[in-house]
Image (cartoon, rainbow, N blue to C red; front, top):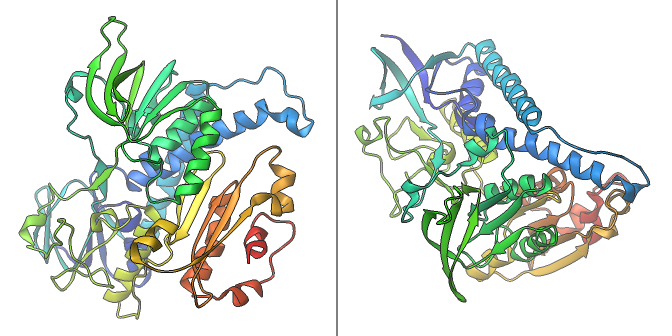
Length: 451
């Protein structure tokens, strides 16, 4: 029986980060992955969606090139080629992950692993012994038990990523991050998109005011939004057209929307079944999540949980940091997980990003703050590159002048939000952050203007 210092189940961002870090530190590591290295994020999530969205953004830019005194005639796109490019990008990055792990001496085992006990993992006929066990099993798409869901064809994000023919119309159930990114992609390519959302605003968890502004921008581009709307049943359209009918209820009563395709993006949930987790008898929260301490260790010494399985944030970058913390703890290095400044980004066009608290979360916690809001037009670089587009930067500042939260609507929000994340994590005051010299002209200067 092979013996390892660390056994890791799951090769997504949490698993492969932990494996690489442990391998680098000279530990013996075995990593089990039943599908592809890179997990959902790399194979069917973050990376492939960004690849498609960049094609859509490039197409948008070419179509509106006249705003910048550039003429571009007969602008078109080739969807099968966009999909093929996405697959090429994913392949390249998966090979990159594999190369890194191999270089650090990680043993990669392809197959479904099952936990026998905290020191033994079975995969196929083999049993592997380990001193420490890291569970990084990720999350899966949640399909809600809507009446008629098994009688209609529908897409999950995975099907939408591989689809090579554009539908005329698309209904998206769920206006969260995944729903909005696909709404953005298909809207750019000329599809009639309807988004049905149960809550009173899209992008739950992001700043409400900025989410509403983003929604207004997409409504202007022809996306139809139905908020505070509950889907009650699904059926094939009665006219025999092969379209899918979504029946709903909201404050105005009952109704239905019919489209050629249906995309389900109601959310994701941690994968807890199918790998012998029940054999560990780990302590759980009331909601059924596994209890972990600040080192990501469970109630069982030597067993750690990282990534989506914790149920904290279901984001790749959170998983990466959690994995580093767990491996540092095993290696005896001082480290602890902080969730104070986890950024959230939606890669629509324009992008929206936030980090730290929102006005809503502070209200719930009863924490006072002052809100500073500034149009993105206060950044010269933003004006130069975003003709006729508005954006907003919002900072939430505590009574002691530290930064509690930051939210940006406007490109490239995803790239500048880290500046605010660092200020929040390091507990910088307004005066301290203002002393940092920002290069001019950059969009990031908007934070300095807001301060």
